[in-house]
Amino acid sequence: MSIIRGGSAGFNSVVFYSENFRSKAIRNKNGTISIDISNRKVTPNFEDIISAIPLIRGLYLFLKPVIAMWKIYLIVFIPLIILSLLASGSSESIIGGSSLTLLSIIGEGIQNHFLLLVAIILVVFGVVIKISNLGKYHGAEHMTDTSYNTLSSLHITDVEQQPRVHPNCGTNFVVFLFITFYILSLFMSNFFTLIMLSICLGYEVFLIKSRILTPFYWVGGFLQYTLFTSRPSTKHLEVAIASYEALLKAEETYNKA
View 1 (cartoon, rainbow, N blue to C red):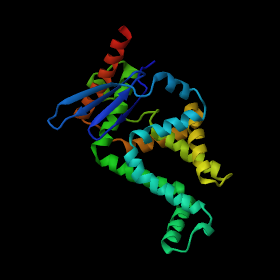
View 2 (tube, rainbow, N blue to C red):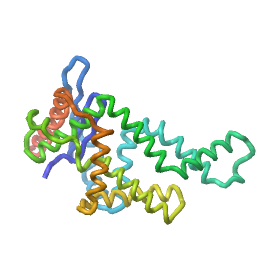
View 3 (cartoon, helix red, strand yellow):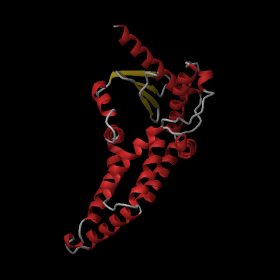
View 4 (tube, helix red, strand yellow):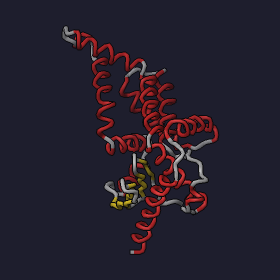
């Protein structure tokens, strides 16, 4: 069983984390690679407890990247939440003001076409990722983990032969979130309850790993391949491999102590 608990990519970096450590490899402007090893901020015991609680674990997993990248989410999603709150309030609470009325109309439109709006946002993010180094480092992250788990090798010739689509990528979780949201929307109308339940239930479905769900993983794989990853070059793979190797070494040293 791999000690790697997850990973993520940046515009010039790759991060992997294990039970005890977080390893970040960065490609510097001068071409060198620097490694930053740090202790996990969240205690392993706490995370293990959360990961064992159905429904709650999905919400926790969803909030982790929000906390890590709060600036991006603040810019993109906070305005959507405000507009949605305006729309969910009664029209009587809106005191005359054309600007508030307009905001309410926009907010109501967001609720009525939420899936479409999120899909548009994801496509925009995907285009940014695809045309930048972020997509290449994301692909390198997937390929490195796959190579170690299937071949027990981090040699670059082995890593570069791996697919850049990964079954545990958060993209697959998003696919199930969309499906759950759509199904639940047929039976309930409260916007925020719908979102919370979609996150919680969507993650539980994501964990099932049943062959019945294979077509949905095809969708997630297609999105990973076309939008959220790009074929990495040697310099991108080297960063991912350096991060992975540093994390393995840190865990080995920790276990020997």
